[in-house]
Length: 167
Image (cartoon, rainbow, N blue to C red; front, side):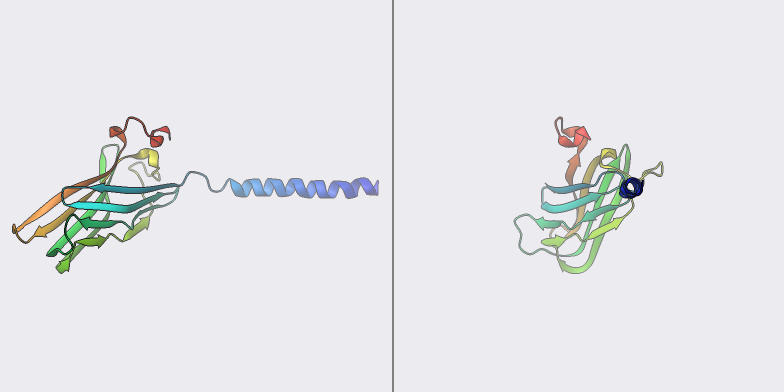
């Protein structure tokens, strides 16, 4: 009888461990998405722009904006903003500006992080996102006017075939 009880103890311990570990595993669910985006406008190339979406967090940035065919471009105003469109709701999720005499021929975007919640109060997923684009604005000293250009990075509806549509 003692041998029988000694044999049951490891089995009971193993079963309890399984239930405890199963409960711990269920605490965090959902998918993590990593997008490495690039795009261009008439005057700009944007490369290496990253977006990371987890069930509790949204991160965007670390891209490089390069002005086409220019090594130096001095201006006293530069601004960009990253837009994310969920359904018909267009929101700015990342922005930066520079004022004062600055060379904007190459500009690193920096990054943001934090939760991003839709209008229903739910954390967003990649499935929710319809479009991502960047608007670049700068003061053109030769024309003496502000110039704006749009860089499209992601548009779900313009791609008939995409692995992202299978999400």
